[in-house]
Length: 349
Ligand SMILES: Nc1ncnc2c1ncn2[C@@H]1O[C@H](COP(=O)(O)OP(=O)(O)OP(=O)(O)O)[C@@H](O)[C@H]1O
Ligand SMILES: [Mg+2]
Image (tube, rainbow, N blue to C red):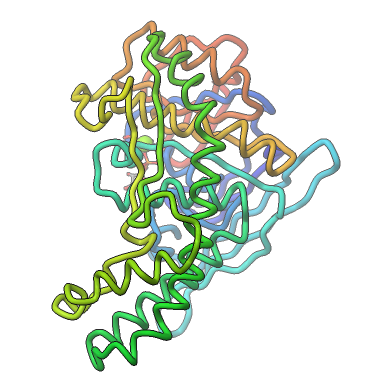
């Protein structure tokens, strides 16, 4: 798929913007703090309704504005669709987003915050695999929200009435929805595996094999009853800590380079490359699942990489469909449309 055109009103530092990108690689350069990341964020919000860098809607409208709007035409081989979204300030002061999702719109974003997937806490890896699983299986998101609510409710029981009788019905529900999540996460990991090894070898130029695995409290088990048993086993500690301690909200991903935990690979450039490889490995499975290639939003994806690796990454993204790549410095990218972002505006370079 591609973004044919986009219009912004009062989004971040863009008061008004009308932009018609190229269908292939778009290179966005410009000095710091001019709006490169903001524009990528706007494209992501247009496509999915969510920002890849914040969960707080209030940050997105131009400071002091009462509303922000984004609209644009999304194109794919079978036809096009116009998408419109509004962020509106309510009388209570909270922000409300409205607008319909396009069922085939898919975006894969990479930004500096993705380094946390490699060296951060398990929660960063869980959000990574949940985001990918949701791009493959859109019902994953609703199940994830349902699961979160269940855990909140179960935790409340642990805090207010911590008895086995009260907890038992929650165990069943947590295990059923939890197993659904674990199953989709495992399938997502399996879908990523082959591409991850290929992409990492292609961009690093090394022979090392990058592998990903799903690490769950229930091991390889597939029945909800095993999760119920894990909850029962954790019960004495749960009663002390008053928190649900077993389930997919505590699981993690393992990342290994030739069998060695990738988190122990210290160099910053290498960590960036691992995180970028994870995002690029999503492209093919997402395209297959959605029936159309995702739009790639790569924010400052080449910084800290050496020239040879940069060339490898550029070669890899030439094979993608529509790509937006930002950089504070000019880059040589053959065949790319060049744009300069300056003070909340954009112009062809
Ligand atoms: N809601 C907002 N309203 C107005 N301006 C904002 C808003 N949010 C952020 N900004 C401003 O937008 C400017 C551009 O931010 P952005 O992160 O897009 O820069 P950038 O071009 O990606 O810079 P860098 O090269 O440093 O990554 C910043 O100066 C920031 O203060
Ligand atoms: Mg930026």
